[in-house]
Image (cartoon, rainbow, N blue to C red; front, side):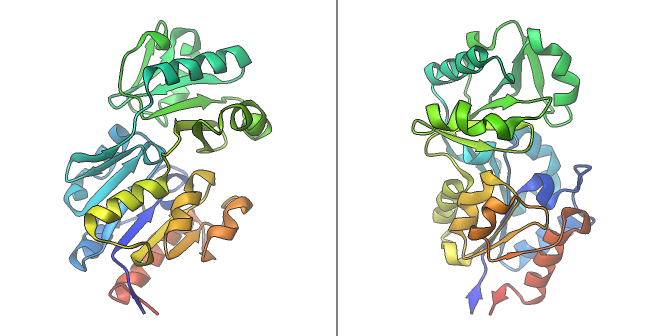
Length: 270
């Protein structure tokens, strides 16, 4: 038997519906977990400033892992962070510009930034990024940057991911895919699994006492970390080896359903 003490879920295509909404009554579920001594964690590639409003009503009952693990928030404070030095993010921007594919997106703590030459993509990006700013040249910014992203508005990311980024940069940075249109690059030690390990240390929770949910490559490390890990019905096949089981779809609220089953068992998994 295992007493679960922490449950972490990816958001897009996992916990959230395709419309980007939480399952019905999910705040109540987070409060119920808290009352049973189980800590809920929203673990996303999204920015912290996007996550905070989404979970404001239950902020005292949970933690946030943003930017694929570069920033961890607990009780409204940053308890772990890992930023890209300016020299690194300028180099990455220039690499993307040289390739001539994708839109460079600088993801800072307060907002995300694109060059004004890509302003035509701003409206679409704001569906994912609540604080998007258009500036003359993002290489001139001097800000705290947890993550650098390349946006592929016309798709095709999977065709160039390995060739253009993993092979030339993978030994220096953590390169991952946050969805069909977004390639994410962080400090080489950054991933959701490492962030959860750091948080677990603060909360006195071991990996065996964790449950994680995910659907894509940027979830691999946290799926590997947890003693119990679940992937979505539509999850990419590449992450299957790291999952305990495959569950239903986000449209069917499969994560919320699984969490309710944990609540029904008072956090005890046999």
